[in-house]
Length: 226
Image 1 (spheres, rainbow, N blue to C red):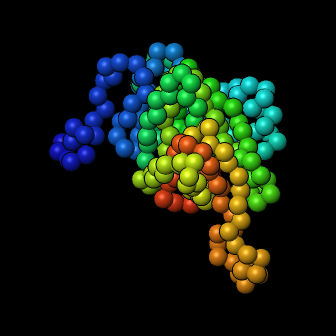
Image 2: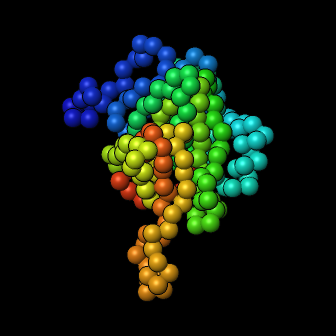
Image 3: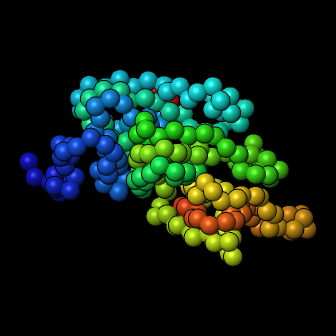
């Protein structure tokens, strides 16, 4: 049988070591002997022996999820072998956190992460005044690897004390957890009465670090649950 689909670039090669790697730009592979955590519904295939179960998120984060509707529905992938993850053909990126690092990620962009990482749900300051239900992110810490998604090629914008950055909340993927955040209104009341510009308020970032944006305000909605 002959076809371009059988090109070596599309072939799943046996893993040479444990951990999370890119299968290609829109798919992540995890070679596991134990467990990894992933968003519910993100598994697209596996080989080996695995069980997939809803992951407990701890009482504090569970209460915050029920109160805010935010966070990310997670599952534990436990077993031995290889598992592939993807989400609506979004671009996938790997981030390695070292001890002392702290990264704030929108829950909708979390794909899979190693169990050596932990996270807390935190609210953007003053978000409740402008964003329906507030704006909450998952702040990751520890040492390990995290895979995230972006609807399109992301943009990483440096933030300096002299030059804050402003971002649409729907385009936000994540940011340096040490940045100070607030919500600012950039549209006058008169403009809103005339139909509005579509840009009512943005998140302002102050300090030293970076902001990660996707070139899209598209929302895939909640992850599928199993």
